[in-house]
Image (tube, rainbow, N blue to C red):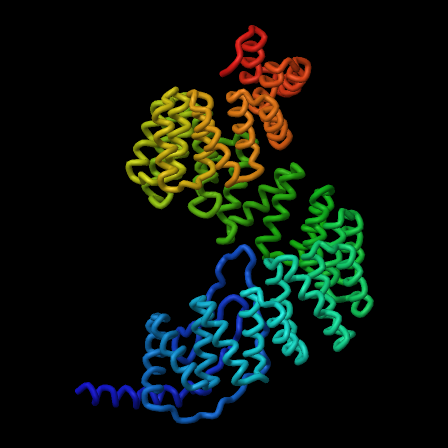
Length: 601
């Protein structure tokens, strides 16, 4: 029975392979980040790209793909390929890749190799993708697809010099994107690696002296190296070859702006728009430049764009925000109302309409719009705004009922909503209720770091330092390198105990993990003061205050200065805070305590 079944499968395999060609199979497209995964064996499905800090660019699709001759395979090969295809149909890509990879190595068939590369790209198996792309080039050195894929794969491993050879192959044949992909990916490289790339450009320029795309990518590399004058010089030369090249125009404008020549950047784009009045990207960039110093001008440009592209919700949204910034209330309301009809912008638009209604103290509109924010990035901010608005209008019980209902409707957001309610209670000085609310949430999620941290702060406010320390240590048990918890625990020990050496070590570790953080530097200054290291304390506290002009930091620095006899400077620092906030309790308490001869808190 087993042999008979296998024979039937092989017949089926042969019919499938002949019908759409395993040996004929090529990558229809070679995207920069991923290739396609087969939805069916005959029609690959294009995946949605993942969100990345530096998204990988995409390659052009070559105009023609090679026709591979159909040739017979060994029985074992056919069987493996069939298993691989069936696994792909069932979305079992590990098996599909394993089978195709084995046969790609054995047969060196270009169709099999390209298929293995396709699956490796889709599953983000970068080592296999690199192996297959190099194997493909070895088998078919003249394949544009293979060279493009090799350029991408090698650049991912920072092997830019090797990648450039394959990108040049494509560039020689009129395909620019492999080189663009390489240069964009070089943004994550180090300075030395980009220098190596730039040193290879003179040879390329000698071979292709009038290739504008080569000049564009050179300017991009120079910009990445922060060689702004050199990049400007390169792009200016490029524009003498082609003064209408949009990417070059955009790059020059950005370089001028980045060099601090903001007026020149805006003027350059304004002039460029004379020759390209319908260029969307250029006008949008011009509007962004203007927004820094001329919001009215930015509004005018966005108005032009919204007329040219009346159904573009992102443009309408930008125009609405500009209208809001210019206090054009009615226009902003009209635009945001228009945006509520687009699924992509509806929730954000309702949130903005809620903010505008708050400004007008339009209670009914506030309630309506914030309640319409059902998901997205504005969901939690809307819950915060609406619950606070209700509380400020003597509707605390209603606000709590609203948050409870949200927890039922959105269980995945329950922890954040518990925290919002606890903070609402704490703002009303209902600290015990806030603590109990957080404890209830922590029973559901005992390892939720944010809930534990917030509860530790509430414990400290209630002078329950033991429980505060307990929650912070629970965080550090899960994440020994949590800089926030290390700093908080160190500061708590500094203020409420005499365990200064232990506190000092915790805070130093926090600063090592989060260098330059002003709150941690303030903690380090304060624990140094408690340890009697006054000069060190003053140094840290001055640094903290320069980065974070906060009353508590000012109080700390003033206290150390006062204790070391520098009364005039201490008074000057305190009075500067009081000039903006005459009733600041932190500064007033510090001044009263020290002028009465009481030090240390």
